[in-house]
Amino acid sequence: MPDRKFFVGGNWKMNGDKKSIDEIVAFLSKGPISANVEVVVAPPYCYLQYSREKLPSNIQVAAQNCYKEKEGAFTGEISPYMIKDVGGTWVITGHSERRHVIGETDEFIAQKTKFALEAGLGVIPCVGEKLEEREANQTLDVINRQMKALADKITDWSRVVIAYEPVWAIGTGKTASPEQAQEVHEKIREWLRKTVSADVADRTRIIYGGSVKGSNAAELAKKPDIDGFLVGGASLKPEFLEIVNAQG
Ligand SMILES: O=C(CO)COP(=O)(O)O
Image (tube, rainbow, N blue to C red; front, side, top):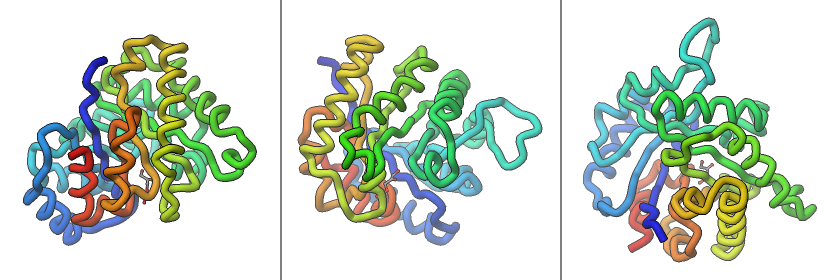
């Protein structure tokens, strides 16, 4: 079984200013951060370069979104090449806030995922069901549909980290239990095994997001198919370090 390096992302969402970023940089610089963890933070676009310049080199920088073209008349969008140009190495695609607040479709998310990978970024595509979908027993239908749109376009999985973020657990304080998260992660891995390949299933990291905190990260991290986290609110606080080091 290939070793999947633990991966923890901090999604800052639309939060922060230079002063609060300086505070985050201070606690991240102090650490400790285990060498066995890959750590990535995703500041708002306008602070990507500022954050990259201030952060220690063991922390990578991601954008929270991108467009599916290199350049051109796309007012308000940014290209994966611009993210790279300012030192970013990852991008999050298909976050539930982009799917459900902004209205992005499976197809559009898959297109930008493919384009960002071709541009040389690592990509963190997010999948996850809404509360009503879970209650209607549609969790796996939704995840499989979102995964299929991605898998139809991805040819190289080596720089893909899948984030499972149940929408009902995001920013609500309602974390999925370790069992609930493990169940879906295992199903996503099985789906990859059947649909893509055994090698991709074994190697691809599947991380969990949704109200992860210092106090619940270690229990979640014990589950065999949980390979890390995508953290929102708690990534703005020193508690993020507890999550980064949750694997012990
Ligand atoms: O959406 C998330 C990370 O991308 C999770 O957000 P919270 O950790 O604030 O619930």
